[in-house]
Structure formats: structure tokens, C-alpha cells
Image (cartoon, rainbow, N blue to C red):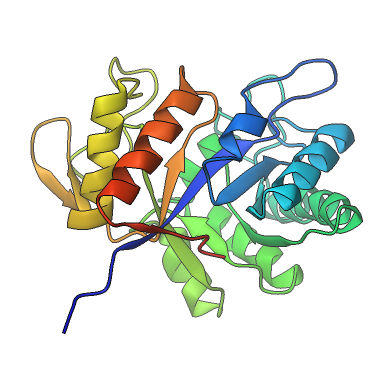
Length: 255
């Protein structure tokens, strides 16, 4: 019997503008990815950017997840906030709710939630904040969670009956424990197209990557992230997609 082809979702963080300020090339990225993680007011995003990104994703038949974050526009959501659990639950509910309204107005649907930046990293080990986010997902009708393999939020979500999509990163270096190298460390963000494509292929076909010290870490993921704000993001995304398709990897939204 012929083995099934590898199946992978390509996701990107989009809609990360605010007012007159814009970031990334959303239109070009939407021609490549299968899921758009749309900023919804925490680290970036306002009513206009949410509507525009939802409309564009729907036009390209790209799945939508809510890219929720700490309420930290000034820090782009990349600073840890010791926020009260009830406040964090409310933040997730209101951010997702705003995007749901805009997506619905454009004939689209929010299919899951992917935390951003420092919140995403906190959910790997911070059980209290993870529980607060999971509580919000339950209040939102059991929306699925996108998270890193091994994150404490994965176990909490699954115990609560929340579906989880495990995610890896094509353009970020990994530490031996399977976590991402901090952005403050040189080499944490991969910008060479060949290196990014090689890591994407490794994740898609070998289900793991080489870490910064040369060791191997397993990454049994269903979705692969390409950051929209990485230098040369569109070229990287196109290179990754072409290499994956050439290797026989099927690209399909996870949600």
C-alpha cells in the first residue's frame, strides 16, 4: 500500500496594522498560505484592518484564525504581562469576538485561535494563563487552539474538550528543549530562503528539526507558521511552498 502524502497547513500572521500604520504584504501572502492568523486588537489590528484582512482571506479561500495577544500595542505583544486570569479571559473573548463580527460581515468565519508573541510563549509553561485562555475558548463555543507541541496549554485544552492544532515554525531557530530561540538572540529568526525551506521540509517529512546545538527535536505538527513580518517574508513563503509541493506535501488548512 502506498503511504499517504504528508499533509500540512501553511499559516501566516496577517492584518498586523493599526490606523495609518501597516505591516507586511498581506495580499501576496494570501496567495501562498492556507490559513491567516488575523490580529484582532491586542498587539495590532483595528476594525478596518480586521475587515480588510477577513475580506481578503475569504476571497482567497484561506481559513481564518484569531491572532489574540496581550493588550500591548506599544510592545507589539512581545512583552510578558502578569495579567489577572479573569482579565486575560476577557481579553481573548473580546478580541476574538471583534474578529468574528468582521469576518461574519465579509461572509467568512473564525475557525480557531492562535495566540501571539509573549502570550504564545507563556502558554508553553504558565498553567494559570493557559487555563484562562482555555476558559475563553470554551465561552466562545469551544473554538480550537493552535499551540506548540509540549505546551502546558495543550494538555489543559484537551482535558477541557478543546481541539488543538500543533504548530511548528519554518523561520525560527529551535532550542534543544523544543522551544523557540528568543528573538533577542542572534540567529533566532531565519531569513535565508534555502535554510527556511530546508527546515520546512524537515518538519513536514521528518517531523522534526535540528536545534541550535545540532541535536534533534521531534515536532509532530499539523501546521507550519511563516511570520508575515520576517524580512523577505513573501519570498520565503513562496520558496517554502514550492519546495513542499515539489516534495509531494499536500497543503490544506488545518481548521
